Image (cartoon, rainbow, N blue to C red; front, side, top):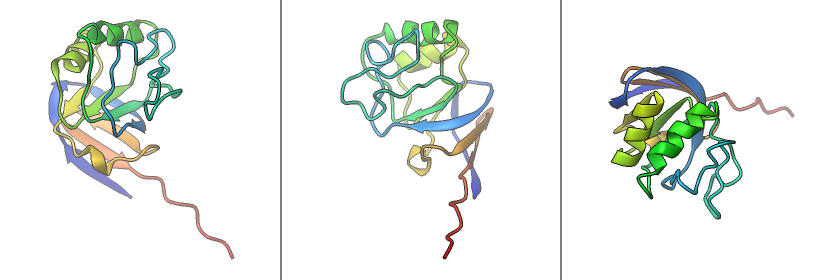
Length: 138
């Protein structure tokens, strides 16, 4: 199954990747290790998972303005998300995406996206492909 949605461009570009979805906001400073891309915030739904090369889907950012620089450090270490999709952007993540050259959209219906969906972003367009469930055998 596949469908297309649209969002507001925060940082334009093209990207593809597997969706990594968080129902909770993401705080980059102290929440994501800038050298490995692993989410380290205790108790976060993505704790222990890597954002590297994924399309990171989350409601909005949280925390310190230094989170923008953390996103840049992720990019410099080669472990940044391929793109970011938000329900509602805020300045910390938006500035981070812009300075790190990571495509980012907001005003996206993120509740429709699941972990493992394949995402293609081109400008304001978001193509979502959901893998077909395996056929049942008797």
